Structures are given as C-alpha cells and as structure tokens.
Image 1: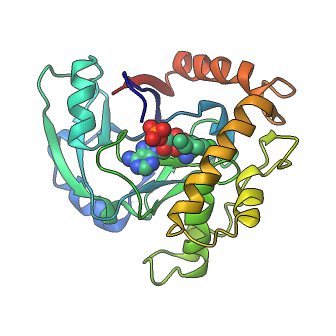
Image 2: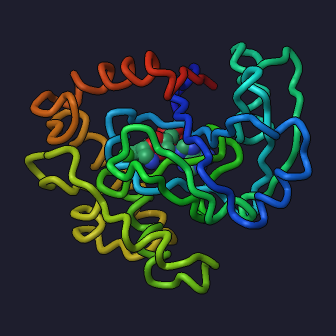
Length: 256
Ligand code: A2H
C-alpha cells in the first residue's frame, strides 16, 4: 500500500429485504425499527458502479449497525465506523454500535446497488478474502472489471452448496459490459482470468497480477460504453460519476 490516506468512495447499498437470520436479529433492536439500513461498500472505482451484480461480505467478520443520522443506519466494521466518526459521517462523536451481526448471517440479504443495471436489487454473497483491516468490510462486486469479484463469483456458481448460497442469488446476475479496452475488450476481468488461467478466488498470486493489469488498462485506456458518460474515457468519467453519486446522496467520501 502507498503512503498517506487512501480516499475511497463509500457506496450506500440500501437493504430491500433481509435474510431470515438477519431479519430475526434486526427485529430485536428497537433503534433499527422504521429506519433505512445501508450496507456501505468502499470502492476505488466509482466509474464501475453501473456493473454491480452483488455485494460481498466476509462470513466470519463482525459488522456493526451505526446511526448515520435520524433516518439512516450504516452497516460496516467497527474499525470503519471509528474512522467515519472522525470524519463526521456518523450521528455521534463516539462510536455507538446499535447492534452486531456476523457476515454469514447477512448472506442472502437483498440490497439496492446505486447505478447498477439490476435495479430490482442484488444479493449479499460470501467472499473469502475480505480483509477486516481495509475499507468497510463490505465489497461491492463488479465482475466485468474486477478479477477478484469475477473469480469469487465463479466459485459460487460452481459450488453453491459448499458456500451455503442459493444458485438464484448468483446465476441471473451476469457480468455487464461497461468499459471497453483495446487489450481486453468489454469484459476485462473475465478476459484476464481466462488469460492468466485463474479458476478460483484462491489463486491469489495470479489475481494480484490480474488486478494490476485490469486497473492499468481500464484506467489509462478504457472507454465507458454504458451510462450517462458513454463514449468518454475512464479517466474523465471517473470523477464525473463519483461527483454525481456524491450529489445524489448515493455515495460519500471515506478516507483511511
Ligand atoms: B474495488 P485497496 Cl471494478 N477486503 O471496487 C478486500 N477487498 C476490498 C476491501 C476489503 N475489506 N474493501 C474494498 N476492497 C476492494 C470495485 C473494483 C475494485 C474494481 C476493480 C478493482 C478494485 C468493485 N469491487 O480494486 O487495497 C474494492 O474493490 C482493486 C484494487 O485499498 C476496492 O475497490 O487498493 C479495493 O479493493 C480497494 O483496495
């Protein structure tokens, strides 16, 4: 990692319907009744939000519920909430955790991913390599442009029972072409995973290489092929899309 703070875009993914286990927990917390709850994901690539197909949590990670204001509650790690407090993103000066939930209990929850082509909602799914020490612990998934996301989804499609998920939470949500590059066409991550023979999220070394290649090619040579900034370079579109999401209230600036 580089030195100095990393500036992320926090993406608010509103909960549309909880998984059965999460619903049970939420029902027991008076402070959560009548409020909008959002899983918040930290991303470095806001221009890819058109291609969101799901979001990922770590099954063993602990998440908290934290009030953002009177109406809205954020779900993220306690560590992220502490950072958010310092950045005046939460309702209180000190971290006030309203409830706790383990990642596996949120799997199967349906959330609204802003800008996604799947506006009826997408599912919360498990990822093995979600770090507790980075971002919010919630990762929004863009399999068209993120090799990690694509490889993880391939695992889930191949072994739904092993991962304790329903095939319907994954299979209908195909990768969406959103950015074109000279080298990899309009589905950069699938093309790179094929080229580097990546078959699983467990192929960590190849994934690190793929991540680097995807980022460079996408950022320096990519063109948007979907959405309001279609035809513009990724370099130009990135800040425009980010700004738009900040203004609409679908996103916020989050640093660490
Ligand atoms: B990125 P950096 Cl399309 N654990 O968003 C593991 N990965 C995490 C994480 C965590 N706790 N928190 C965030 N991330 C992911 C989009 C994306 C991302 C694309 C392509 C590449 C990419 C959609 N997923 O990241 O170590 C998030 O995934 C590759 C670098 O701080 C976030 O941006 O650089 C990125 O890693 C932040 O990683």
